[in-house]
Image (cartoon, rainbow, N blue to C red; front, side, top):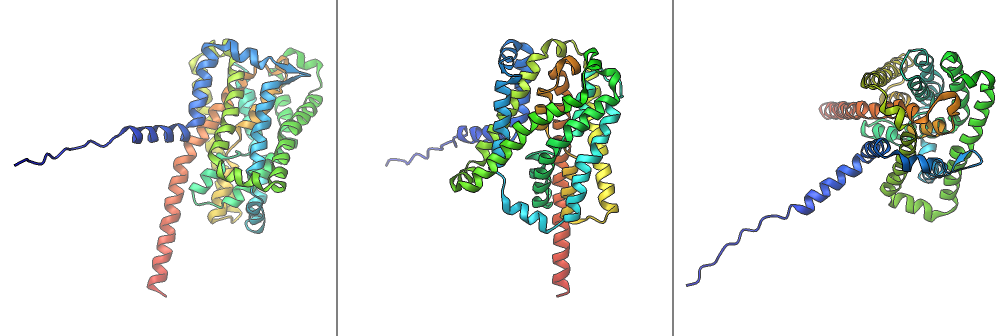
Length: 372
């Protein structure tokens, strides 16, 4: 008799490992990209410096194209129905968020500009990060994960980034002038107000116009809305890639100065980024409680009002006069650190808030079951 042989087959783990690796890269694309930009920018800065030097009429060609792509995609993925929903509910939370993001949190920049960080460009980076609007995408995602009011978060993103085009140049100008002793020697003969106007014009061209163009295209051409929904992940990765390119060029231009910066200064900036975000959270949590804002609206208001956008900060940095403010890469480092800090701090916070929301919902459901 022939005995049947039982062949034991081992499961193929390669596809599973590849899927996990892909998910890890996609989930951490921006962080990995920043690490790569930092590594290449510092070890081989020539390419980034050369590409950043391609300019026409005072506009850095590659940098401008990358920024425009970021905000065209942002406009093309913007859903009108979610904005209308936000206007119908949580108007008090929306008003508070606007005031906090554009008026209250930037005040911390006046403190940073007068703290003796070295090099002095770290002061500008921290001050600028306080002055810019809320995040473009990560904040809304975190609010969704925390079971907050997503429509309100989206409305705060759109409104503050559009209004921020007009407020950031003049707010940052006022902050920089308050620390005028830190400005370059050429600043004494320059009109800082005219520089703010020039910055406003560039932000209008590279942020406001592209966002409006992307939004109009979405509304006028239905296929764009369909493709934006279908390829959301690809568009997000494209956005992040453009931001990584801008960061890479800035770091490459400032590689020499960055390499000469001592580790103690970097750790001080990391501590400042953590402290800044804690202060933002504390202010917004206390103020929303005092104003009677609660529930999902409070979650959205606190989280969105405590975060700041890196793309707008990098756009502003790319147009600052280096004769006055110094090299852009040094100014960019605090902004990148603060951006990563707020992401790492708010991700577990969102998870905790979601668990609290689920527990409260379960308790309410149980109470209804007991007392129908």
